[in-house]
Image 1 (cartoon, rainbow, N blue to C red):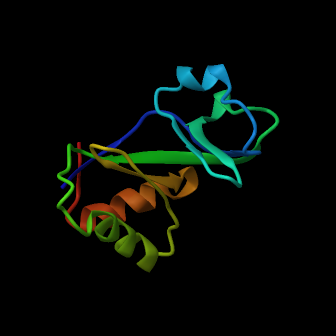
Image 2: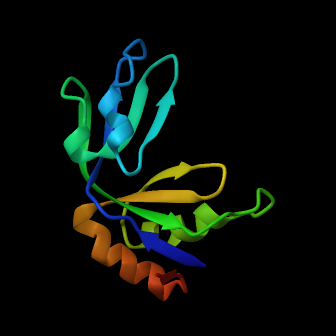
Length: 123
């Protein structure tokens, strides 16, 4: 399976559930927004993070090249397992077409090496 490392340093933000989505988030080359009754979570480029948010900084994003068929199983597990064995944590996001994993920027070189040993190819 082929992977791509996205450009940029990203963050994961938490806002209260009643907050509006800041307009500048739409300027991020990649963003993901999730809202629940408990929170509004936003993943975006670090320099676009809402100042009033609780922010977890310094993430890199690895994209699984898609599109992936909905009938496929175990893709996230095949990424997560070798990383977990090396004590590298991740934050996963799935979209209609594919999956993304966020890895702390300090761990990205190790994560790439681990995934390459697990037969993933970075393009």
